[in-house]
Picture 1 (tube, rainbow, N blue to C red):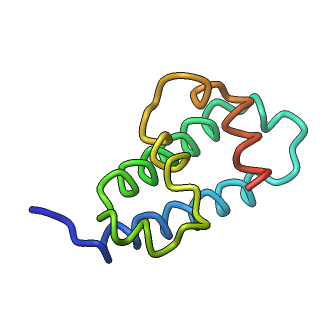
Picture 2: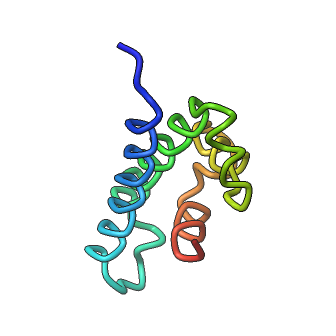
Length: 95
């Protein structure tokens, strides 16, 4: 079953809401950068965002040029620096 644009955009929105919820639930704990469960939860949501962005139609991406689509698309790759817990934490608190 192929997903349509609205489904993909909803996936992105839901993942962003979930990221915010995870961070709120984690609170201001000093060691949350080292929380492996939080890291995995956030990383999964980044992959959801990346996969959805990767499959958006070019027209959809072109209609919102201020969104860093290439950066979001890179989130679908689970390797590299985004897998580092500190990097995942930095991305979520600065976004």
